[in-house]
Length: 289
Image (cartoon, helix red, strand yellow):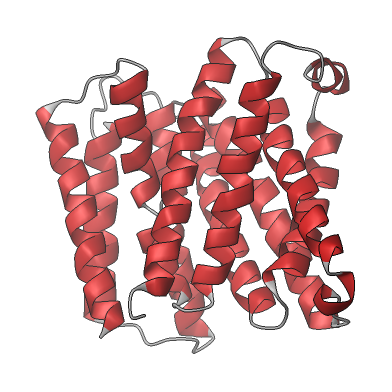
């Protein structure tokens, strides 16, 4: 199946986009973003652990390389979530999203430096096209309505760097072990890291709240299913391609906002969405060949 790897990464990005809408619903209900992120990973960890223990002997692998890369992947996911929210608090959603989606640039530079893949004009063109689309979609081009602080810019770029880290972490871990043990180790480290930053009292109150269903849906869809798709898909494609294809996430989040949250898109935003989808389509066809 030529499109299997790219298709699975796209499915993961669609789930991430929907989870962004669910997260927005929970934040509007007054829940802390770090607590939301913690439960997103914690619910997924329980699912991955059960999946791993179901066939423990077959899934268990002793490999130092696997453990190190899985831990780094978990660190990458935790850092990406944390710095993304910090960037939103210090600047705006538009700036935070735009800066976080500079990740493909970091991925391509690292891949080029370590000779993991060749740097080509086609790849740089795709990166440029997607970044232009993200800027148009998020409205980051409007300097009159956006205030960018040093902290907001630094946190947004850090989110992009950690995004790149979890891409490489999962890519290298999945080449050594199966998805069950990779995801279990990664999200175990994720839960430990975010537990240190979360409000423990608020986190405990989630269990007895009326919003527990939203948290479970967020964890299952936004991390459970999505990262299963992602880890399997990234084994069949390159890090740079995976990072660019995953940018279908903001498109999905925007569509979720239109259909369920009553948001509206301007002509420029629609144009940005079209650029992203066309670039990803061209990249997917090129990758399959």
